[in-house]
Length: 324
Ligand SMILES: NC(=O)C1=CN([C@@H]2O[C@H](COP(=O)(O)OP(=O)(O)OC[C@H]3O[C@@H](n4cnc5c(N)ncnc54)[C@H](OP(=O)(O)O)[C@@H]3O)[C@@H](O)[C@H]2O)C=CC1
Ligand SMILES: O=CC(=O)O
Image 1 (spheres, rainbow, N blue to C red):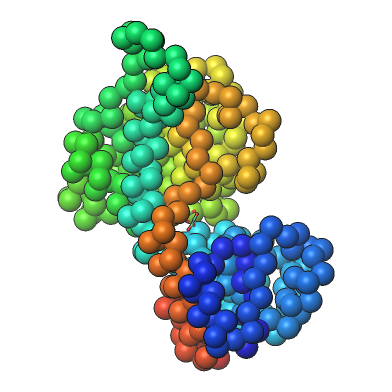
Image 2 (tube, rainbow, N blue to C red; image 1 turned 120 degrees about the vertical axis):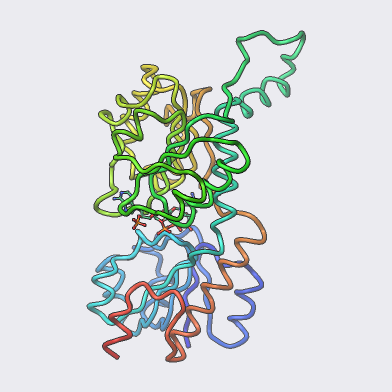
């Protein structure tokens, strides 16, 4: 089988795949014009990789394609209906990254509230010359109210940490109520507007879909407390980034902790990069040695199952399988 690997597949997994199949790895290329990529795509039976922007044009260049296996839980890069129409399977990697991403979100909350990166820079720049005054104080995290938008796998793992470790009050908004989460973590369900109004930390961790695209903008920032911190680990396009920048510039909210952006990698001229009250991470929610390896392994299992006529464990479009 010919397998196209894109952007991120961990080396041990790539090596294993290469033992059985004809595998080509592509990184940092233009998927619209790179001749070697387009040539291999025209023969590819399967694709494995991170965030390949899949559209009609790309699919028209891939007549043999049977499966696209994302090395991520998010799959907003895949046009699922179009893939189904073409009888191409799509898979993702849910679960194996849940705890790692939740840990990172707690890190973002604490870093933002306690100003850790800013104060780290302060010390390293040689500015710590006397005992610090209130200019450098942070904000408590423990016993505050955490609003989680998107109470799925990762949202639940964040709630567990915040409840058990930090004694936070959990308020959440999701498409459906989660009785188990409410009972286990004493979480309260709220409308989006209610959540925004009561939360000290607003944490966004939904998938990017037609419904969640730009769900947080000027109106929503205005509903938040002036002292609130906004944390986004979902996808950049769930937020109107210009409105976030304005909310931070106008002190509509107190700060933000971000792992995702409208444009990734972020443009160096983006004003978010020059704000001390904003912690900016380079989309590293799942990026630990253990978890990236587990994601690549799961993605490879999904890919190999699909290519050998078995039902992949994490099939996103079961209709393709049912029509076989
Ligand atoms: N920064 C990073 O590195 C990472 C980011 N992510 C992002 O996190 C997302 C969530 O992952 P995961 O928790 O595993 O996914 P899940 O599918 O388990 O959870 C998603 C949750 O979002 C809720 N949701 C969906 N649409 C809406 C909506 N319109 N309004 C409110 N809530 C909504 C769902 O509600 P319901 O249960 O009611 O359907 C569900 O509870 C990924 O899709 C990805 O975009 C993931 C991993 C790493
Ligand atoms: O952003 C990462 C993912 O797994 O989704």
